[in-house]
Image (cartoon, rainbow, N blue to C red):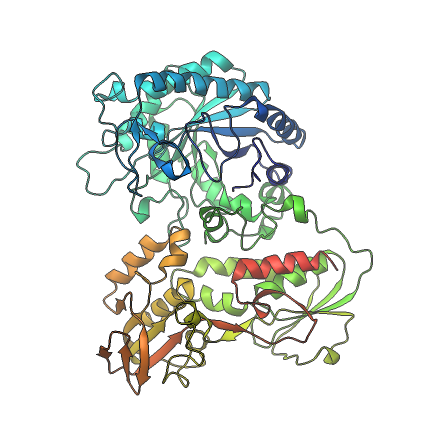
Length: 622
């Protein structure tokens, strides 16, 4: 979650985040991966287990979490060839196999191997001294230890390469070093990839070798549990270690069963476990002894407590959208959640609390910003009415949820609606508000969103003040998704917005029986590339678009002008004719009164997280 704030140990921000999950009913809370040696670094990982300075903050966090009824675990990590030399120095790896950025690591020497064996043991000893309950050795994907296990990434000819026994030797010696330091005073687990899935490789670290290596460690008494994940840097979308919403729930059922068949220690699986039913079925069908969840608990830190209290229906549902958790961290920013913007900011926003002066509040707009504002305001004891001009709540999120492969956004909208009903928020649909004077309210919060516009054009062509010539009368993609305009026949989508608005529009059109073919023009190298790369969705989406015979994507292209049923590209090429031409060029903030209290896209078009974040902050001030 990148919540370290530059501190060596657990920051106040990260402590508050972990405590919220401990109080919310988690049996054990897992801290982020932690570097065990100065030879590895990460822009997001700050718990340096090679420094005694981490011990006080670890001890305080472990004590506080235990007092809350939970336990604290941490993952011992070395990045291997995934470390970038741009951060200074060089990366270490079993062999000089570049990472996906093309950066070549140093082949680790025997002396450095011995130094790391000691370092892992010393890191474990610090965890023991701090009173942690479990430590987990990271051997997954193509981090350092996972690379040693791989017959593809480990080309060594010494005692640490070649045969299966040689390739597992480094991990075995590290586990022995850890056991020597901590004994049985702390649980020792291993996190590993069931398979690396390097496409086209005639050999690989697969399920057979992965289960065999974990069995060897378990039978030697070196591990107390095994936590299973999947994938590597090369893995295809179906083997993603952070699966998105279009991928199956409970990702590792079969892999978990394979490990349970050979191991005498408990097996943990994670990956798209979202509901209590998902978790229960994974254990009931023998896929796991323990179920781990990350994004599920980012979305709702009280997931366990709500189940225990018989309120599972009130769980705030993770959408696996990866936008504020994965996407923010990839930008080098602290992670959060689009449906729970307090995630990662518990120390800043904390409990919403009750207002000392309850007011009559009107919220104008029923998109994510208005829904979250109304919810938090009502929780604080205000008397809240919500006004929405359309016949349904949800705003642009409702349009997004109706697109192919995006239906897991619907439970989030249903959760908001149920919460507003529970909190007795009065909802007025098909009700347009033009002035605050029309409302009987002490306070008005505007959340009226944004309407289609040209703003995305100005990202690369700021001189197009009035948009692309010849497009004034053309419909926007949002109008098409809302059913205001019917597309038919051969359709051209002019995209300069990118991300999910463009992708959802194209896939929705392709699924429409009235549409014979969709051609999309985008300045990006692939449709939606910039945004979807950060959320780990671009490979899956690009594959879907390529495989759909009803879709053609013209990349790295822009439209110079439109004349009738034809479009002229910036290269001078003329394409067409098309029966329908649709614009996907962004949105413009709706106008609100001067000095009004406003949240979301009517302030500036920024997406779901900004909408809910604005609302969460403002509602706590009233």
